[in-house]
Every structure is written in C-alpha cells, then in structure tokens.
Length: 262
Length: 337
Image 1: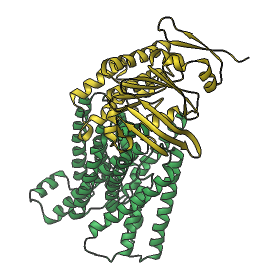
Image 2: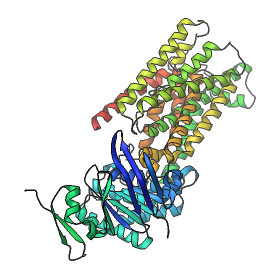
Image 3: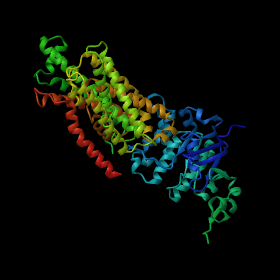
Image 4: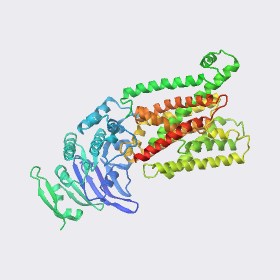
C-alpha cells in the first residue's frame, strides 16, 4: 500500500495562546476527493496552511506522500502540493497570464525562464478554468469569482499531485461553482489527482466528494462517506443547527436542509 | 495598463532602452563647463589632444560612468526593495538604507588615517555594513506579519534617516574639520570624478549585486504576492528574501560610498518602468537599471552645467524632481486605500 498523500499525526497548532488544532489525526489517501467541513474558526484554513508548510505545527508531524513535509525543499514541496487560497492581493498590477504562469515557478530553471512546454501547461490550465479570454487583463481588475478561477488555474499549472482548495467557490455564481467541482472531478478521474476541498457548502461537497471530514474546535468530529457523516446528530453537534437530511434523487447523495431555530 | 504587453515587445523595448542609456552616457560625456565635447573625448581615447584637455575629458568620462553605475544600482535596488517589502514607495533613500551606508562611510573617514592603503575597498565595505545594519533595524521594526504597512515603513525610514544623520553630525562636529570638509555636500550626493580604481570597484560591486538580483527576478515576482503564497509556489522565502535584500544593499552601498546620498532614483525609475514594461521583474529589473543609468547620467550633466561654472550637488536635482513625485504617489496611494 502506498503512503497517504497527506497525513497529520497528532498535530497541534495555535495562534498565540488560543489553540486552533488539537492533536489532529487525519490521513488523506492518494487519489481521493475529500471535503473538509466545519463552522467558522474550527481550523479549516489553518489546516490548509499547515499542509502547505506556510505554518509549522507546534507539535506533531505532517507527511506529504510519505516524506516529512518540513524536510522537503520548497521547490520539491511545491511540485507535490498546490494551494488555491481564498484571496490574494498582489501589490503590483500583474496580468492574469502572469499570475497563472507563476504556477510554473517550481519547475523553472535558472533565471526563471519559461520553456514552450511551460507555456503550454499554463495555457491548458487557463482553458480548463475558463479564463483564457482574461489572459491579458489585469488580475486586480477582475471580479472575485474570476480571481478564484485564475488562482485555480495557477494551482493547476503547478502540476502537483495534491491540490488543496480553501473555499474555492465562496465568490462564485452557481454556474461556476458547479464548473469548479466538475473540473476537480475530471482532474481526479483523468490524472489521479488527490483533492482536498475546504468548504462551507455542505451540499456541493456531499455531491462531489468521496469522503467528508467534519471539524469542530480543531478536532475531527465526524469522518466518512457523505451519507455516514451527513446525519442530523453530528451536524447538530458541530453546527448547532437542526437539519433535515434528504437524498438528492439525481446523485443519490445526501442533501442537507437547515431548519430555522424555533 | 502597460505599454509593452508581450515578451517580444518587452525584449525589443529593453534593446531600445539600452540604446537610449548609451546615448545618454555619450551626451553626458560630451558636455561640460570646459566647452570640450565628445570629439575631444574620442580623439583623447585615440591618444590625440593635449594633456590638459585629455585630463578634463577623461575625468568627465569617469564621472559619467560612475553616474551610470550609481543610477543603475539605485534603480535596481529600489525595484528589489519594493517587491520584497511589497510596497511601491520603498526606495534606498526613503528606507534609510542610503543614510546608513553614508553613516558607514563617514565612520570610516572618521576613524581611519588619511591615505590608508586599500581605502577604496574599505570605504564601500563600511558603507555596506552601515546599509545592512539599517536594514536589520528596518526589518525588525517594520516587517512583521508579512506585508509592511506604508505608514510603519515610512515612519521607520524617517526615524532611521534622522538617527543616522544625527550620528554623522556628531562625527562632523567633534572631528577634525579638515577631514570632514566635503561631508556636507557628500550628504547631498555630490558627484565628483572618481579614480579609475574607485570606478572599477563600484562597477564590479554593482554588476555583482545586480547579477544576483537578476537571478532572483522571477522569485521577486512571487515574493510580491506575499510570503505565504511565495512559499506555496516553491520559494524558500526566508533565504530568498535575505539574498535579495543583501544584494540590493550591496549595490546601494557601492553607489553611496563614493557619491553620497542620491535620493528618489530608486523610487521614480522603477515606477516609470513598471508603467512601460509591466511588473514582471525579469523585464523590470534590467529596464530599471538601464533607465537609472540614463537618468542619473542626465541629472549629473544638468548638475554640472545648469549653474556653470558652479556645480549643484546631484542629490539636489534628484530631490527637486523626486520629492514632489513621492508626494504625488503617496496621495494617490492613500486615496486608493
């Protein structure tokens, strides 16, 4: 059996004194699509930042495809794991094309010169994310949804085997939300990509993910297939909201309807 | 948006800019208070002309080449600081790095016996030490939590400049007056004809530092996104930041060591070049260096000729243009945010 794409072993982390993750144990098997759910402030974004070595755990260990994450050189790490951040604010006025081609950074040689093959990968990533027509536009002038698709294209250009997405659909309209998840599914099917999506959108995650992880206060509260995790009791305990769970007739996946508190 | 929007056009733009820089150096070398021109210089280079006019034009050539080095150094250092600090208002002068380098140079003058052997190497070394210690303070104070706020950055620069010039004044007022004769004009960036030895030292240090910066041009693009994203895109952030900052400080120190404080070049030139070439540092750095050469050579020619036979300090010219430009940028930035 091959090593998991990503493994957290008893990982704790806090900003200052407040603990965010508490001895988190989590394994992401290679070739799966996993949704990480949970209310605000449960450590979802922290999880992404730890998994991409933007933060160092206070204790515990993280491995990436079997190797200790923090021992990998930055370039090697970036060839294995790519991140789609929630937002980015470049100080300078880069074009969409320039932002996407930055995804090639861990593959470039001295002086950061792109070869035709690199440009082809960037072009393909832009096409897949439906941002080719924006190539010459200023990134800063785009709408929130367009920016998110550009950042997704940049992550694809990175050609990493593990893709971490931090609320990739937060600013997207319905059409592009579905398009992003369809794209992730296709990348998973075609290239065997491992995908971890941090999301607030329970129903979309349930429809597209093989496995859901429900976080509460920096710990795993529930973990399993969508139909195992999305039951009224665990959701009530994590989100403090009563829900009705139905089955989406088209996909056979569970579908959560929040009930307003009386 | 940028004027030159494809790599091919940008490359062509760089070639054109190189020609402009060469032309600016040639024109600057051809004018001066003596009335001797480019023709005298060319015949002097072939061994013609009398000793007196050859001396004048050769001195002028050395000075113009030094101006070119200083301009290239300050402009590329400015571009690098702006990317690393993620602040388009950064400049070696505004950050206080030039002041720190000048302090290092003044300390060197204060403590070494006159005519010491190897002074032409030790002077830039002291300037470099001064520049780096200023940066350590700057980073320690202003660069916490990723992106440096404009206010914190500018305030720190103001304080560091005031502090450095206070120490300089201390040395000047307590030291031997003969030794510090030129210090006042040094602080205003008084260009003079360097020895060929000094010129070659400045040229080598500038070229070396610039080479390092150019090697990190793509890394600067990524660092401009923020430390976290740069790291996720494969940049060893801490190491890369140090290398870039040290290289930028080396070229700043080389520029300051023999010419003093020339402000705002590192602010204006990268800003203008970003409008023409876009923010990609693989083009922005060479463009800034070339445009910086042309700008400072031209400013120095103006400093030499406007009030001829008297001379204006070079720093006066750049500050007269750069000060208002800085305020305009600051107002624009405050209005945007």
